[in-house]
Picture 1 (tube, rainbow, N blue to C red):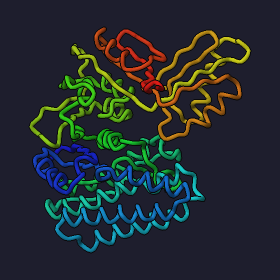
Picture 2 (cartoon, rainbow, N blue to C red):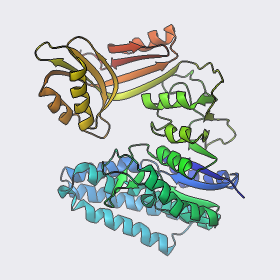
Picture 3 (cartoon, rainbow, N blue to C red):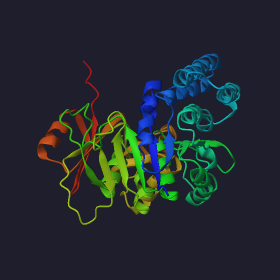
Amino acid sequence: MFSKIVYKFGGASTATPQRAKAILPILRQADGQVLIVMSAIGKTTNALESIVNAAVMGDIDYAQTQMLQLHRFHTQYASALLGEINTPLQEQLEAYYRYISDYLYKIEHVHVNEAYDQIVCYGELYSTQIFAAFLLQQLESTAWIDARKVIATNSIYRDPEVDEDATRNNINQYIVPAMQTHRWVITQGFIGNTPNGKSVTLGREGSDYTAALMAALLPAASLTIWKDVPALMNADPKRYPDAERIPLIAYSEAIEMAYYGAQVIHPKTIKPLYNNDIPLYIKCFEDVELPGTSVQNISGTTIAYPPIIIHKPNQVLIQATTRNFSFITEYHLSRLYECFYNTHIKITLMQNSAINFVACADPGAHPIEPLIALLEKEYKILINTGVELITVRYPKPEVIDQIAAKGKVLLKQETRKTWQAVIDNTPPNK
């Protein structure tokens, strides 16, 4: 009896038909029944976001033209991958295109976040339909599952909470039977379904989270995330050429990295794996012989981590000052937190003095203006946009000096294991 394992492949792994074909040996060598969680091809999500934005701004003709080009890209991609598109796949891709094309004419009557989710989710549907057809051609024992039947969420578009009980029931209804009769089962990352039957997305790079949820709720023996990087590194090699591979890392450290903005792991990925003691492997699809990184429960083991450097760009620094010189006490803190909560803006760093509350905020998919409007009802507000939050775990003085020289430090904090700073690296006016 094969064990169940989950493989997640991102957009880079299928960016070209040649790369997609290179996934086959990985699947053939898998030691178990594989649930494949796949993202949209290449930069498809970016393209769909551009289409949504154009339609919302009223430029329907441009949106339609771009959507037709994207549809043609996928049909040409499928032809290159398969040799010839079979009729069922052709009809399915055409159905996806017609849905989006029709929806674009209705978009002005829909809230932007809801419209975003109804369109952007089709990137994953396109990619998995094409890859499922390829697997059927090459491996035969393959099933395709619509993740919107599986991942149950609330109705907060672009940033929903997952209903794990309902999702577990759906996995038992759809995924488990498919894996009992097929060696390979393919589904989508990033997307789910609201209680009223609408599509929803789990946030950018949310396919990792989908894979972790499914691995936890199956349950699976392991989750492997196949990336175009050699492993989990202590820093971005593009910024830091001497970045080191981290061969083994604890769940607790990985979740800290993800929380602070490490791009290799989605912030919500670790929790379901930790709760079910499922190891996570980060491997390179371009060179499967590379050892990668293992993330697991290593309590009782001491690891000497190098300084771990994480950059989180596009943050907003907000200072709220009481209007009557009253102290920032628990009352004001509760009021301030309520404003952030009600506008779905995440706080990534905060600090307060007698009459000032300062927060570095990550707007994510949500506009910052409603939060500022709420805060201004009670406080004087100062903001800096486009700032960068830099976090260093296990800091060393020479690393801190190097980072502090990158721009103007607007706010910094230091604890036993973590140094953080909000940096304004905007070039000064000449």
